[in-house]
Image (cartoon, rainbow, N blue to C red; front, side, top):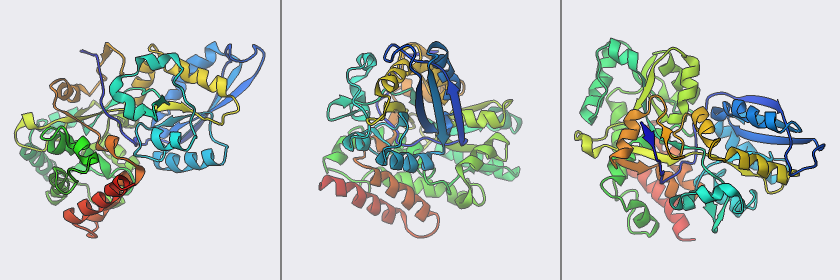
Length: 424
């Protein structure tokens, strides 16, 4: 099966696997004198560490460039990288998130003058029109997505088969699968609520079905002030989130479980499932290379045709506007963004290539089938006007499971955060 993908939306934060630092030696291009040695610093999140192998191809063809790459967990990356940029000691090339929902997203970085305008680069001609809000700021282009990602339920197909449990396609079947795994002593879903960005995953997995399929214009109406979180399918989203916990679907101690632990739980069959982004696949497969892992959409209703799957463009590379090696940095990004190279980065990321004719990565067929049927919705933060909305969402989800708020209270806090931007 091949794709001609045209992803519509973006996510502000990816999952994390390892923390590591890499030094790669390599080359220079025609942008510098042939004998000039250039050291380029490249920064990314630890779930993109597999990029180091792809970057080796660049260094082989550019022997005067040395690439020093650093990969750290996402929550650390979003704080330290922004601080480094403010102190004028940031990497020359670094990953940025699409849209405006994160401090390391295109919008806030471009507004601050931290990233270089790349509108004159040749790869901009392949930019999809509906990516504009994700990759542009004030009409200028700053990044190109390395792929398209989704978010759903990752499971070991062999574990399901061994226990004669079929993949659920309805809400009732999903709750029944939780009960089945509890009866055989396996935690149904491992949830790493201790890690700051994990609380968003289950919400984001549900909203295509609860919000966007029944109300395709929700985002535009929301930005126009015609609706709200509280007056929309978001109430059903958070209610079902809580219902999963009440039904015993979560692992014990989920409030103290980290993202890394939840991936390891599903990799080692301590848990039957985990709900996360597709770029989590490489980390799970690294922990269990012989496992057969796949993803299915988290169903929200008992009618399969009402259940959708999320779709979003992934991260891309931006150039530090204050880089001391601006020409070399732009050349590296231009190489990364060539149509023949982005699929390599998408594969390393566990994402679907945005280039025409790309194959569906292993384990994602059920998700892409939903896309192809039009049963799809965005990662909701792709339309959120600023980082505080996503931050508020993640906090109130944690509060829901520590008894500090209710569904109505959580939605009220999200509305306050969102409406603060509308008043500006």
